[in-house]
Length: 494
Image 1 (tube, rainbow, N blue to C red):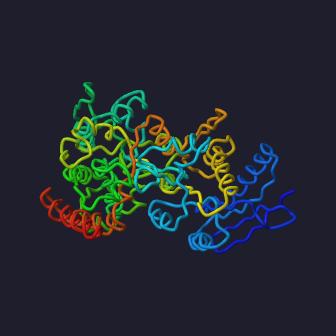
Image 2 (image 1 turned 180 degrees about the vertical axis):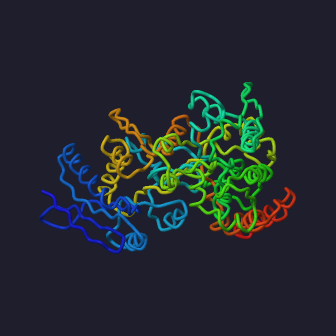
Image 3 (image 1 turned 135 degrees about the vertical axis):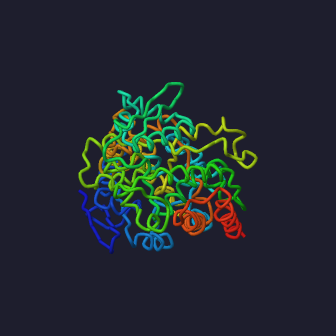
């Protein structure tokens, strides 16, 4: 018989699933997700029962679901005799853990753990400093793109099949996308325009524009990370593909500088507004167009596109008057860039054709990983690996991730027994669909110097462009954003 002993330490919840005869444990598992504090122990109890059924061994487990003080608790335990065998970490913490000798190189392992969990990690998503050794099993994934309602998109294009309309726009070239954006803006103003996509003609008729729509893009002018970190990451993928490679850069090339500028320009010249009146960049825009304003613009249908991630679903769903049917049709379109405006002497691709997949794909990244602790016993490691296999391959583990944790599992929504679990969040489903097509790339921007994107690059964009009217020229962008940001990058690497 088991009993659960629960100790609440501020926001961190420590639970020992111990035998009645004592409080010692066979393995310690730490997760940084406070939102799983009530459900993770239940899953681990079920894993314990499954393990006992498979092996005949009765084990006891200590579980910690961290919160505001979870990091301090983990740090203390990592430096004590009560070390977790499995703990969550992220790329920014990797170097310190390696230096302390804490991490197992997962490439050295064998068996099902290696073949099912380690070997299947995409290079762009490996927790690695050199691209060879890797140290983490993805906890979940996140992704972003241009959020759009597929039915609204189909109606504007006057296409009956919403999925066909969406796929057509997903695979559209940058030039075709720009023509569409400008045609929608014209139609909002009462002018019909005929455009061509993949050889077929479409008339963007003002009669097909929703009455509430007043602009194409919801842009969070106040949130510099949205056009710094996220939009920058798209163009940064032109020169780096992994976080590990990005950490090795002593300078940044900005191979896609002009493409970066052109994308920002396209967005701010086709803005949706909160009150229906025309809006442009300037102090009001940079102050008032916040995260909540952006999710509200797409949730109310005032904007067609919002560049955001799956985490924005809750904000969109909280918009007053939004209907479930509208939320069910949300999906991600790629953030498209002008690949003809790239300096390929500075890029990792030789030409636009090699980079073309990016305009049909979305960035998908792993915010946190499960690491195995090299400083615990072999027995504890074996149990830790067994738990991670159970979590990511068993029907119960996959179901819990999808339906209870509300995660997007890195390893998919199908369990080893063939059971498929459905992510109710439509944006999560969209990410899974891109992953199934292998139409994803990573987040090398996390390998840039700490704070550089938001404190330097994004801040220059906000202060020199988003806050100033009229919108500056490309030469202004070079002198006021690219050149100082390059110097800051180099200074940070010295």
